[in-house]
Length: 270
Image (cartoon, one colour):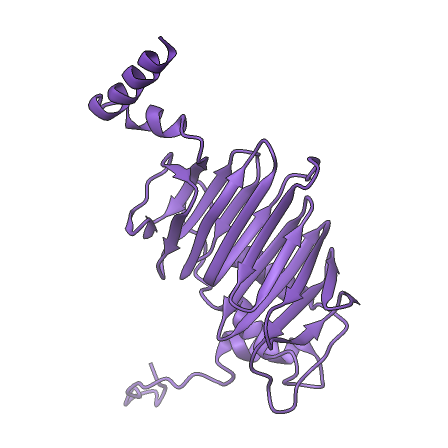
């Protein structure tokens, strides 16, 4: 009798086309739901929509103008910035086993506290693994660099392969780095000629990372597609401080040239 009921339920899920979301939500591999987005964003190479269900191994992608916020079943929140790609490899809310992979882009994760034995929340980039136990943090990957910024709580960052630490304001422990609130680590497989090591995290970078992954419910946010990257590039650029590098990177570093025809009477350009 039980086998018959299960078979009937499976057939109904296949035949009742108005109810695909109900069948999908009942799946053991259900991971969460898309809460908000700014077009263009895709789920498994198809246009994503608000309230779309998410399953294990779903691939989320945003284009230049797109952003996306997803809510996981355990209450954690993932906010993807533009030009990003994130795969939800696994999310088991009951055992608190979560595994994510980011090939490129930027994402802010607000993770609920891990309380289950052997529970984990882990995010991988091509050259680093980030583990957390209830934390609000940012991860960006571009040009062979993984940038991790912790807002609250603590994350553990472990380089993979031949990746090296470019910047570290956290606490090294063996091959891993503990990154606490207000701290940042940059991991890279390509070291700059002069290299750089810093023990501070400029407040501009913290604010820029939040702006890059902000996904509002209604109007689109201001466009800052590479704000965090531009600020990080200036980490070792000027010994005089971060203000100079920040101003140049956001204004173009010079006075704009205006082409116009002077008024014959006043000799004034306009």
